Image 1 (cartoon, rainbow, N blue to C red):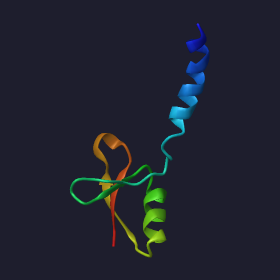
Image 2: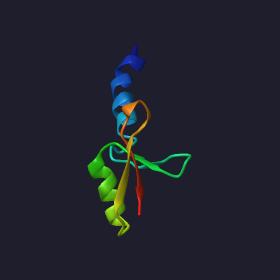
Image 3: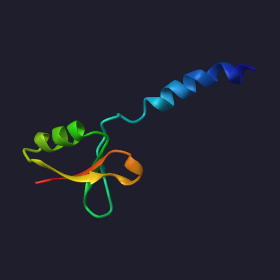
Length: 67
């Protein structure tokens, strides 16, 4: 019964593991972000401009390149 009490804590910790604006590299060299703003911010941090490539597979974010 004690393990049920620790379940909500484990779920909260697991949900905090990945920041929502994380940029993920794809196999073909493009990058994937959750939003267009996150993609633009990522490229601006590097002093580059974001070139949007379209929606990511299954519409889970956007594909882009920094140029």
